[in-house]
Image 1 (cartoon, helix red, strand yellow):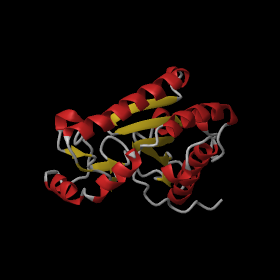
Image 2 (image 1 turned 180 degrees about the horizontal axis):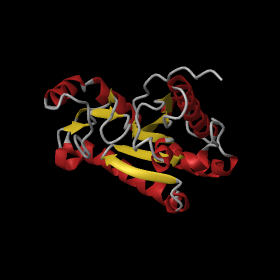
Image 3 (image 1 turned 180 degrees about the vertical axis):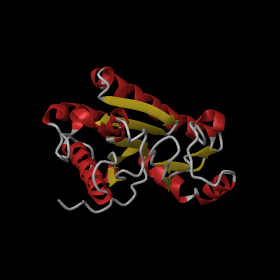
Image 4 (image 1 turned 120 degrees about the vertical axis):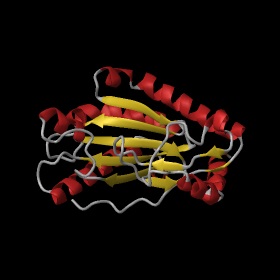
Length: 233
């Protein structure tokens, strides 16, 4: 019932999305934490899914629809519970700085997988030692049918742009396939690569390059966008 409701909301969201776009005076796509959801907002659920690339760079995907405050509170409650579940389940990984969990807004969670523990250098094969953590993550994601995940891969600027784009895609798909194998339905998973185009830190430093090599998982209300084709080996 809940998934059907979310799909219906997406179908009536175009007007609300157009109004929201008109209110963006900067002309740049963006996400405001908590905007359009929760009982306080009252009138709008969803808005724009930002595939959060860094603090200034987002990709908008229409997700929401005009709804009342009660529906906004309901989706906020779902994400409250999922966030706590993720934080409790991945407590060890969070303490070791292997996984970061950020509440971007009421209806969007960002999970950052540290590259140093998830992949070997220049490899798109998941580190076997990290697979138990992926299985724990999948267990939580699979429980919440109201949400789905967009997995986005990134690299630093070392090497050619074309190589980095392919590597980021392959890593995103490796995480996506592992999550599916561990129980998350395929229709709730989308993977894409951003290569070196969206650094979160300075690529001229060792620490900056380390931060830029990452896979992010964006958890958002179910909308089932079309999945891109799997990258070639």
